[in-house]
Length: 481
Ligand SMILES: Cc1cc2nc3c(=O)[nH]c(=O)nc-3n(C[C@H](O)[C@H](O)[C@H](O)COP(=O)(O)OP(=O)(O)OC[C@H]3O[C@@H](n4cnc5c(N)ncnc54)[C@H](O)[C@@H]3O)c2cc1C
Image (cartoon, rainbow, N blue to C red; front, side, top):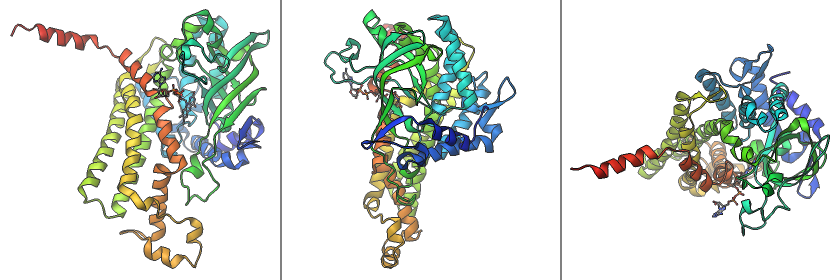
């Protein structure tokens, strides 16, 4: 099939019947279930763009078909740039608020497939498995979720000490059919709207036999027997678009995943019991860098959207001449330009890795991913500071529909350059960015979704060659005069 349409995605999701729990009940058919239907429709719109703009959103495969551009295995800087453009189109559609557009995982599957020998070295079957899985995922244009982190009841001995081995996802047995796994993982974003679950290695495991049952990498359909998704509250409360402009479109949902003796067929296993390879998988296959590429494109889209919103708020409230407002806008501009510059540098310095794939340069992407968890909350804070009580002066669509209230609304809620309805729509959007549950979750997402910021910072130190700089300092200290 190759690149799919929104209808194709929705009908596949409709038939899936994954076990999804929310608010004390098992959710029914997802595409019409209130908590998920709107976001599923948004994801469908992304797929429709592939049909509407095939040249920009898809690429021609060896078999003559067309596949979604995020499945491309880049062979040139030009391929990397084409992928940026496609990902930006998707990110802009969701105002950067849909973090898990399917490209997030597609780029990672493509990178791992290109590095199939990495998996073959563990077991020759695994290299074939990851390659065939890539072809299958690309052919069906699947929407996937993933889960990396094991739950912890206590920090007493730290994860690597396996204190919570009873909670963590682990291998129970190997059978002729496949591997049987049991336990729990968090956190699968977009799970209810996904067809496939990718399970990749969790945070670094100790290189010791006791860690081997936890060293797993595989993929299973979301409706696999024994697989359950336990969702948080929905932030899409079924309100009109006017009331909750973002939550009514883009609540991508997060779920804890329970594996109740789930059988993973052998052809879906990519690594099993290989602690060393599990620990190095993301870096060795360059998958982490390709994912950072998607993330930084999203950061550009999201920071641009918030800057546009802040500028419109300043304009409509006649606050543009105020010095402190200008200073804050300038701060947001520097965020946008920093993200754009990191992206551009990463593309410009893209180079071939040992698997023959063009990979965007890691240092600028790493810089962006370390900065954004701090910059995004500050952008949200600026929206709050520049909007203040206007974020609360936000009557709903129902109020505007009531003729008894309308004269007061029209009189007291108008802005310098816009009528009341327009002004309230603007501040309801600002509220959904900066104050609502949806907005709060976005801040949390940016702080943590790509990993604990402390460990991300530590990885940046490890990946930076500091020696030449230290040598310069030493040489300076030795200068005779
Ligand atoms: C909205 C959202 C969506 C997400 N979506 C996904 C997803 O789709 N797939 C997925 O796999 N994961 C997802 N995640 C999970 C994400 O991978 C984790 O949040 C991240 O890896 C951090 O792990 P943690 O939450 O267990 O935090 P922890 O590791 O518990 O860290 C919490 C805090 O404690 C500190 N800390 C931890 N250990 C120590 C220590 N030993 N000493 C001192 N301080 C310490 C950390 O620095 C941090 O500040 C998501 C998270 C969020 C918030």
